[in-house]
Length: 40
Image (cartoon, rainbow, N blue to C red):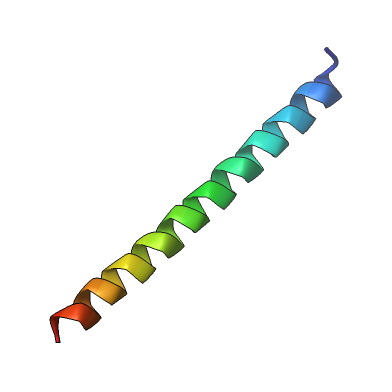
């Protein structure tokens, strides 16, 4: 594999990592907000 291919793979997987962190964070915020709304 060339350096360009390795760089492209790194960018792709870092992008996946960032997207998954954002999705998990958003889901946790939604779940926590619904938990607090359910207590009232």
